[in-house]
Amino acid sequence: MQRTFTGQRTKDYVDSLLNWEQANVAMKAAVEPALLAVIIETGMDAMQQIGMQPSTYDPYSDAINAWYQQRTTKIAEDVNDETEKQLRATLTEGANAGESSYQLQARIEAVMGLVSTLRADLIAQTEIARAQSFADVQAWDQSGIVTAKEWYTAQDERVCKFCVPMHGRVIGLDKNFHSKGDVQTEAGTNRKGEETTYVYNHDYDDVAGAPLHPRCRCTLLPVRVR
Image (cartoon, rainbow, N blue to C red; front, top):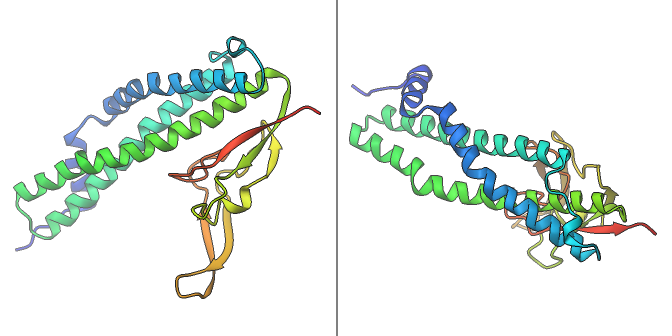
């Protein structure tokens, strides 16, 4: 007889594998020093690039601290939530296929091992880019000589269809290019040469700056007072 896992049984088993609350705390603690280092270095560089002394940048302002605490918590929870979802999905699939305990263990190791590492690397790249944009904006705001931010793409053939229309857009330092929940649609042609509409759901967070999506190569430029 083929074994099956109900949703509740799978959840109970996955919950027993790890204390997810402790995992969130541990992940947040691991992320914090790396993200803070990015915020400090990027902000100082941003000050220097606009002709200000790097030492005038305050990486411990209330605004930065609030964002930093919220961001590291979100990163930790999102990484572990995704891991938990993948464990549930793969264990349900394996159990319903009648796999042995050894085969199920291999599935667990795959999610927690290489697959987890690749996923963590992608998240790290995206969050570092997001922290860099945030630190740039905070430094520009502290400088008093920058009033807005401009979206800038790599301007080559690899720029995606969603980033192309972003190039050159200028908004206030405290504004978002997209808000969470926005749906971006762009016209284009598919591989068959047919006209189509591409859709990107901005369902993760507000887009206050680059990156627009994972592996995005865009950046922000300062717009000074004139």
